[in-house]
Length: 151
Figure 1 (cartoon, one colour):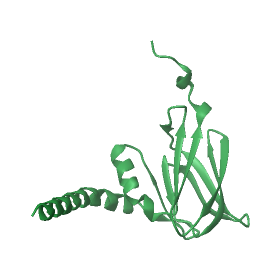
Figure 2 (tube, one colour):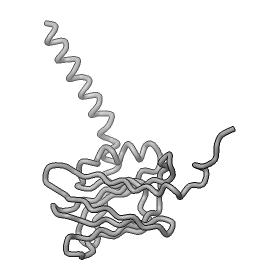
Figure 3 (spheres, helix red, strand yellow):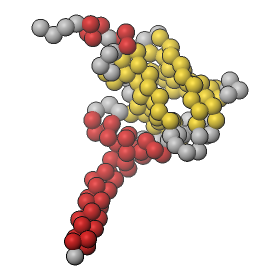
Figure 4 (spheres, one colour):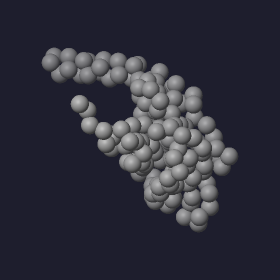
């Protein structure tokens, strides 16, 4: 009897979780776009609700990119991104991405360049079948307030 009650309680908790998060994922999925290259992508993450929406669909994309600045990692919007395949061909580009950018790249090796306030950073990422990859671009010196001390 105790096992039945535990199983029922676990199932109800699972249903409640699905019912509460499903609308968030659907809202973010409505923002998914197709680039000229045919790749599916979405950018967002402004405000807590949108961050939760984006997290709800993150695993649907092979590459999850986060943009931040300063030592405390404030969210950055307005980063320009270019993604090149292993042959050096530009396969994806976006101007003024929001703090979270998810791109569904095919399996392969890519060079990702992100520019913000005139400073460009790059990462190489290997996309595999097994999981999505996460890159974090942080412009540590971008925010002067980080060096200020609270009184």
